[in-house]
Length: 412
Image (spheres, rainbow, N blue to C red):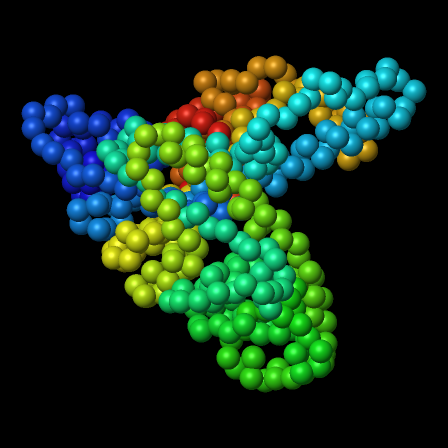
């Protein structure tokens, strides 16, 4: 059962509990004769790049833990593209021909590309972890659906399904995500933002999403019916950025649409009751509660149960970034395909692996101090540590102490 940091320190100091896991920080009681636990609800806000997670006490209606899971779908796609280019180049050279294999490459029903399947698998990994660490009795998922036709052409017929209390929240939510919840012209945040036409409607502009931006009221008033090229005449860099941002493809919305039902089916297979809610309902709950825009806060506001959720002030989420488990490539190449170094098949050096979370206490020298972060090992024993402030190189292995073993994620 999640408890306060003060009580955890007292239990650890008195020897009644021990640390069983550092990320998320978890203690286990050595002796327990009686006591009850309260039911907890795990709430998810799946996204293309990040997924917000929150654990809510069903009795108190308060968030007791929050986390943000950063996906690595873009890195997976880049590696697949590199592998495809390498194989294509090998087929075109005067070397051993490796023909494409189609007969034994049938895709099963419900197949997803690896970059999308990764999002589903990592979320399910954390659902299983939380179910093991805490008494999770129910799950809530934001089953968001971006209507791509409606986004591209808001004047399409059949708009009655958007009428009601939540009217206008779906398209507006997409624009807020696309422009980073900031004014497209001045970059101000945490102020009321309005939907604005980049090319004014008075001069032939359309309602297509590629012609829509988010702007604060002063910028929207000053721009008026001016074209964006005239309005930003003295800011060529900003003009170029806005034009590029406006033409950005809808791949993030497509990724969410493609994985939402696959994730829902996997959650139902856990035999826990699953509550769903739309993205508009999440935005509606968060607006009524007066909460800022964060992935983990959106997760806490998912569904009907999110209408009365209490988020403690000053709460900070655990950030878990999917970092992978390395690769099996022995010969590393440069940008032109020529070998530049050879790796050893050994993974562990001096009891450490790349990906371990360590705390290094350096008593003297240029690197004197305490450094905590993700480890990069070398056979020489001179390690690098990726901390929140940056990368620290040349840390001797004798100064390192493991606080969390490699599990494919980097934590902050």
